[in-house]
Image (tube, rainbow, N blue to C red):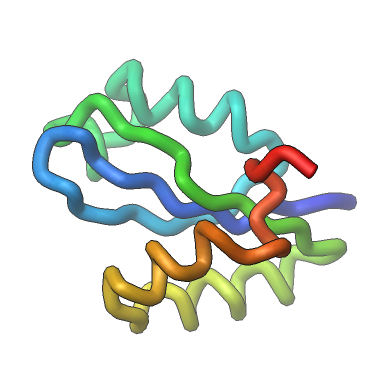
Length: 88
């Protein structure tokens, strides 16, 4: 199964949210429609990063590591080839 680790950026105040999902487009819709309690008060969200993982364990480990990073790292990461949102 494919899992995605993703980073959202709030267009309200520029804060970041990190998560994992099996369908990142659907998950963004859920965040922006208020279906996620944690992110519902900072709508709208923009998905700025997504990367592929081939198992849930590696995705969870990566998400945990990302939650410890600073915003400068997230902005840098968005420009890297691992970001599947960048047109190839």
